[in-house]
Image 1 (tube, one colour):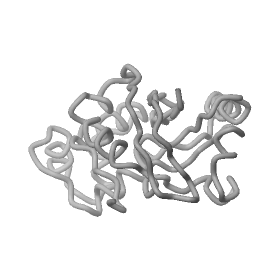
Image 2: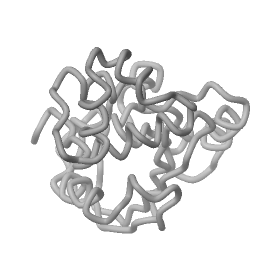
Image 3: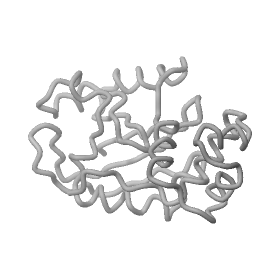
Image 4: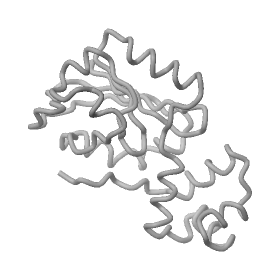
Length: 185
């Protein structure tokens, strides 16, 4: 199982969306990434791929945070849900919030998992589904339709995943980043 998350196929689109949401001019974004404006323009158009350091910097910019009151309310709804659900950063898979019934499935205290990526616990089926997201336009559409699929099993005692039907719903957050609601059906 890979330790690294698959990289979005079109980081330039994500960069341009971030700039537009935050009203950042291309010249200022180029300064942030320490490149020329023409390089940034080529990244956004897909004519040039981002170097690994720039891609890592972009991922930090796009990582979901629950700073706004509306985003905190979403996390509270997840934490108070009676259903087995959790909320993760759509890009990094960091755990943002978890319902008590989902937390009861874990053998580690939820406090040790919050803020950490759950990617290392992904089943082959989850990995396959993740690898199809960019082809389906998951990250280009503001609120794509929810996806349902069979999860398969993993061998983890910490975050066990049993064969079940899973639903992913991508939820845009107030700052333009995205979270993913993960539900067991």
